[in-house]
Length: 326
Image 1 (spheres, rainbow, N blue to C red):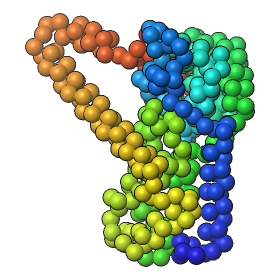
Image 2: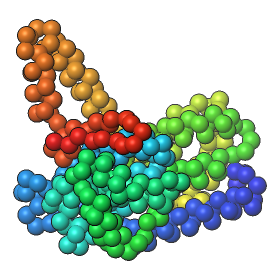
Image 3: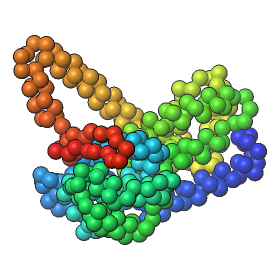
Image 4: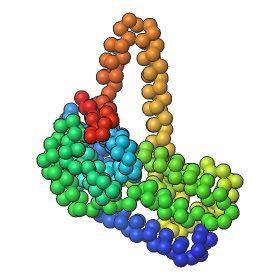
């Protein structure tokens, strides 16, 4: 046995990883990229109210805002996204309706977060709070009905392991000796957290197994770890142990594809942030050179707002979280 830790501990980790992989590959948790034009319901892509990739990305961003405000684990959003994707991947009447109606699509994601919080967090979000989150757009009855439809649609399978859970298990296989373990773990967890959160919002990752995303993230991040923290020999031992634990080569096609997707997500995010920064610089210039700068700025923001959830803001108070949706 490779020297990742003592034999009994390593065996236990291997067993957990195998169980998690078995769960993620079960038919109940299989998803497809339902936002691909070829898989959308007939006529949906031409419907002005149909959802698209930006709709899903904006909902994921909104869910992160909610869990941050409530103090929940950000991985809870992974569970909510997984539930939503499972449901929307099914060829059911309810799923098809949600894909052709943005309002119903948003309801599915908010309800999925409600279910994820119930299964993973110490506190719950009741129907009244959920209604307030939508500023009254959805009633308590709407959430009860959607929860019933969602759970039925996924056959009550709500515990698919997340990519971040795989990352934590894989990090448990780091060699015990010859490395600065605390430094490596801290770096990988922090970077993987950011990387996987970007991947959650990327529709290309919908059909990718969490274990592949986790392996891709770990292999990508480890390359940037200092050799003082993780020397070459221990690095090779770690990768060999990961391959033994997952039954998958780090250079396999599935892991390579997942790695490419993660890299694309990071590039897209960088371009988006850079574009936003340049946009605001142009706004400031406009304000300085135009007497109608404020008006022009407001109009430009309205025009550039995403069509699904066009404007989101959090009003922090002790009783509610407000969102504004145009």
